[in-house]
Image 1 (tube, helix red, strand yellow):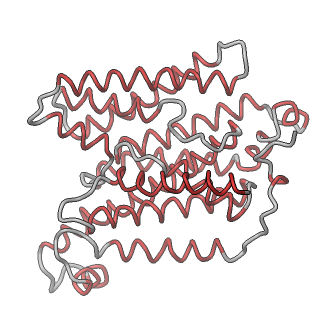
Image 2 (cartoon, one colour; image 1 turned 90 degrees about the vertical axis):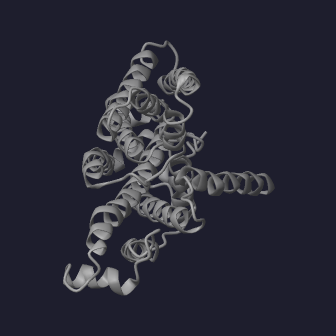
Length: 340
């Protein structure tokens, strides 16, 4: 039976216009997003500061634009792009369209690390670092357990990841149960729902490095990911070491996901939905699909963040909005495939 994710398995024609359109959107949307926020700034004020500096503007404008909006816009685009690339890589490695970046437990592990830091009263920087460490350690534990199973590596990794995700969720539930309901519990709940409201320059710089590093690694492995979708025997016949490539790809996708979670909390559906859209538009060849997925993921999450800041008086957690779009998308996908 032909693998479902091989480049030859798709009949989608090349859409040469797609990448230029996405690149244009990736330039326009961030510029628009800088004008959106709770503090009422006119476009003239924002662009006046960006083009001419702090002269002749409200003294609050440089603080808001430089310290709040620019880091937030960069964070939204980077997280969306990173999660989309990580999700696409995992779906290809596991040959399963329902695989997401948290399949090995990185999101729940990072969430547990953040909850531990929050209940101990640590600073925001310590919460971010602890979330990153717990996320990485959870995936290493998953890989350690899965690599010792006697059956297929993909199946054993998924089973180990499922087990550790449930353990982390149980631990998070216990922490929420004993947390102070007036102070700590709301902070934990809001963090777990996903939000970019507390992004600043320091937190952005800490998380941007692993996201960019992991994304770069996956881009360098694009043609090898194509070979992994053929199966291990075929990949070895073509001259690559599947286990080694899979380990590097898992590590790259893990540091992307850990960096994204410790910066924006648990933001789901991006790494599950966007690769589907990219694959449907451009095909399953990772040489073309990964750049498209990255740009689509960045634009999508940036748009979600704009809606989160502007729909209501209070900011909506961005994880809620991505779920509101992701779940109906998969319902429509199931119905469409059922009819076809």
